[in-house]
Length: 139
Image 1 (cartoon, rainbow, N blue to C red):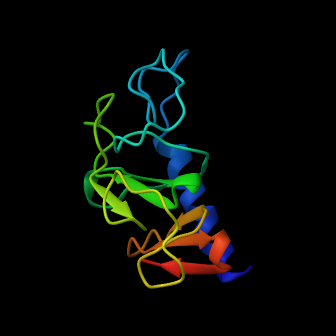
Image 2: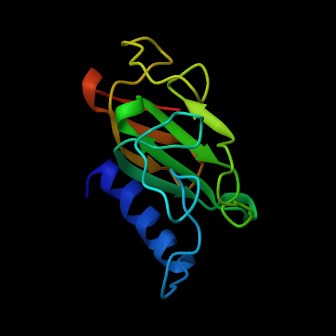
């Protein structure tokens, strides 16, 4: 088994254990409410071509990471249990702030079309497949 498989498969198992099944959606990320589907107004909470999601369940909270590919960033929320519709992310990776969306090149802080995400469940390291820059980054 590859080292990446050892990280991804436990993450999927943990996510499946903590998933709650509902007959309909009751929260939304990327839009102001459940009735909107506007394209990327970039007020800090919108998403444009989401490609990956990762959950970190260490410490009694479920931290959520979403790759926002067309905005060249990864957004994170500290606790999915307390998240409300329209809440801004608690962390923005790959951009100087939530209203920024341009690829920042191959420096240490920029992404260009981040796609897949994975969390190392033992220490919380986040791995990002930075598609447009042809690399994988660890945060």
